[in-house]
Image (cartoon, rainbow, N blue to C red; front, side):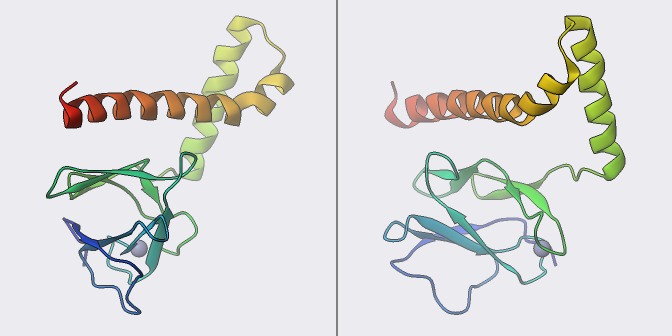
Length: 148
Ligand SMILES: [Zn+2]
């Protein structure tokens, strides 16, 4: 059964059995852990680092960035944890991935850049965009938290 909310629990180390609906936070190990929100029972570990996950705690609920994309699990679930609530995100199909690639290539031709160069930088560009989005999110989040 899908879990709609994740309640934070601050721990030093993770219990051997994770409870559904709980988002464990270990500052000691700079990692969060929870059971996949789809209910499949798989443990999901999200390391906290500038290149990986970050969380914001408002005293009651946690928001995590970026989204949780469990591509490596059989369920392949993808969701966002926002103020303790689980919001399900898109699940790319092979067709969608192919369509996005084709759209990128079309956009590229109008800019008259070599296609091969674009292919190589495609991942870097999307990562950069993601970082910018994340930074904007955190700027807002921090000014909200600190009232700045
Ligand atoms: Zn799952």
